[in-house]
Image (cartoon, rainbow, N blue to C red):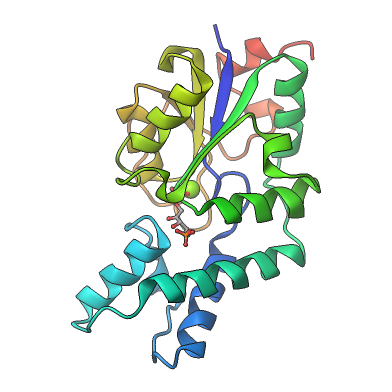
Length: 227
Ligand code: XBP
Ligand code: MG
């Protein structure tokens, strides 16, 4: 039976990647780096998960010395939080799914590549609550050495939940996320996002346009029936 839901953040709970992209670009401009990531460039760069890893990868690709990634990323994280504080919408169905899961006694977790402060910024913007009031378990960013598509962040979330993979269901928007969840032995439901809609989601339990209840696959529909 289903005891917990584990959510990816970026692209799954909300369409956050444009806010990330703008925050990266602002930090590059402030540093006088001469870098600018347009949408096509960013789509390609998203294959490298993690903001710091993405910046290092871009320097490598373009044959430039790596900048001070730690400082750039700290500024990027501040800028991102300020942007989210101005408003962010959850994707359709997310708020109701979280409410229904709570009512059904399911536990809620996050397994994300994004930095922990970004999870907090999203929870404040979308739920007006602290992230740890919305989610029982948060596994984020640099808590694991290997980011998605490695399974580590999902394995960590499961360990913190104290549950085997068979008792949980993961929610993702990307191929890297599907690979990570599957690597941890989880079933995974995919809601493709703006930057990931053309990706290959082989291995997913279901690929649905949104998390609205009309689309809920088994075992979710049964677990939440009648709440
Ligand atoms: C999302 C990411 C993140 C964000 C930026 O992947 O790759 O790196 O773009 O976050 P997923 P940070 O949704 O698969 O977790 O800059 O904080 O790393
Ligand atoms: Mg994602």
